[in-house]
Image 1 (cartoon, rainbow, N blue to C red):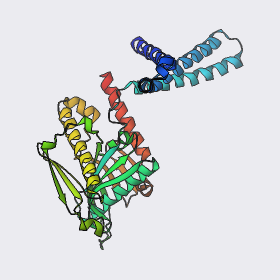
Image 2 (tube, one colour):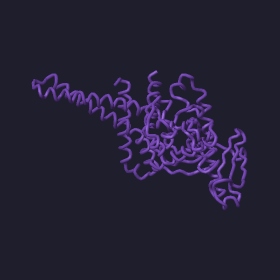
Image 3 (tube, one colour):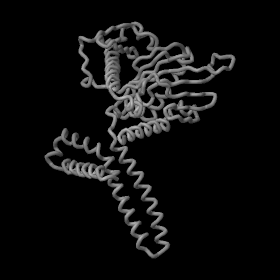
Amino acid sequence: MIERLKQKLDGLSRRFDELGERMSQPEVAVDYEKVQEIAKERATLDRVVGLYREHARALVEIEGATSLIQGGDDSEIIALAREELAEQEQRRDRLEHGIQIALLPADPNDERSVIVEIRAGAGGEEAGLFASELFRMYSRYAAIHSWQVEIIDRSETGIGSLREVTFEVNGKGAYSRLKHESGVHRVQRVPITESGGRIHTSTATVAVLPEVDEVEIDIKADDLRIDIFHAGGHGGQNVQKVATAVRVVHIPTGTTAICQDERSQLKNKTKAMSVLRARIFDMEQRKQQEEITEQRRAQVGTADRSEKIRTYNYPQDRITDHRLDETRHNLPKFMEGRIDELIDALVAREQAMKLEQVAA
């Protein structure tokens, strides 16, 4: 480990201990806000300091095993020491990689809940069916992680078919996992309506937006146009009788958000505003990304929604992620929300790209 990095880690380790001591001081312990502030900072250091200290223990073990090998005269003990040395060197290398990952700048949005938008693309009714299946897949994935799903707006084209759906996934860290799903998803299969057995290709687009608090996006009331209308489609007769659906338009940008899934006009307005904030926040982030050099964008990726990211091939029972250039099987299990293995690989890819960027 290079000396400059060691000095930085020593400083973080000292800071971690200082914060622990401050929390135990009587005058601090009675100040709830101060305790929360210190605990939050200490939590950000916990992983990297833990890895660094474990790394230090591995170095001690390596030194001890090396001494036995160099100064021993018992062949059996030397053989055991060589095994220990190899094991501890592997542990050291693994910990050094973990420390590098832990020191990477975190995505400030990673811990947020998200708003997900799925839209049927090319392929007619089959695209709508696929959009519905993607919604079901993400709903099941959220349930596996004990996240809550709330529908904001949906437009149905037939039984089990969706033109589009917008929904919240509420849970800590939802964005860190689901952000990798933004893009064009392609399905290849024989539609139910196809009598000739021909394979059709259809698409659906997925957008994943971090949920934004009111204080983070300054939206002036004068810049909004709010329309109230009767809900259509899903919701039942009660929704049809009373004008509860809400459309909010941000006049300066032309951004629109609609919510009609709740029976309360106030709840629909609250949800529509949440979507509007997320979309405007996303627009601002994309403007900032445009200022980044082409080289860096090539390294970290843009998550552009026009990029084809994944193909679901039913006849061959395979899922191909085009960013990883990897193919996996057991498509039925994948569509039940068991997608963590692929997301783990995408997270590792993101980390590798960031490491390359830091090293460049």
